[in-house]
Length: 295
Image (cartoon, rainbow, N blue to C red; front, top):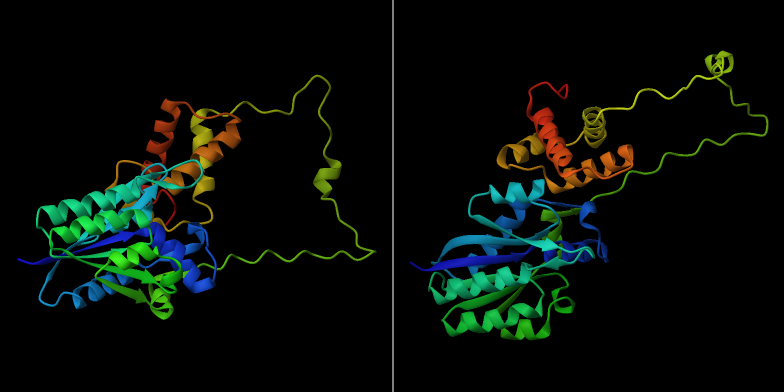
């Protein structure tokens, strides 16, 4: 049976997709991906290049700081999608992502598991894998995002059997640049403006000599609970978060980093290994317990 596999470099999709939509690269935190739409578009484009051939699966390659994000978990649980995660270094650069794509493409070609491959990337490092796959009889189709000619490696484009481009209008169907909330307008005070002091603050007596206004220190459980409350405010996408937590043994990376940072600020130190495990356990329990968040 003849099969077609699709290989997607997510870093390229976000980077070039934002350029296509706004003219410049936009941070991932300000981009929203419609996974269902991009998978549908790529599948349609791929199968147009190989009539009568079935889709094997879509391989999705991305980097991760500390485990999968909610977006990663949603993709991992999507039919016909295989999630492959590399790492991200301290400079924010993806590592091992290209090598995963190269290895999968070569292995599938060598094992004669596919007759066609569609690759969505711009990286020249993939060129050798394209050449090797072609020696096993695989036709390789390269897809780019408008304007793809300026973003993709010329040598990679030359090696591919066909080169396709997703138009800006179609990119906008699966990728959206989020508009940051406008800052609250400052309240102008006139020359005669008077800032009232709450009566309670004026009348409140000062502490007696020899007494302390500092309350008892918070326990680690109280600090973690406060960090969880701050992480979930403003209200998060609880339904997506619950689905991600139910499908994974850990906490999604974007929430884990915020929790650790908030705890560090509250405690003025890093959490120990045991405290981190307790933090993640409490977070997961709080989100997954019915009614715990007042929803």
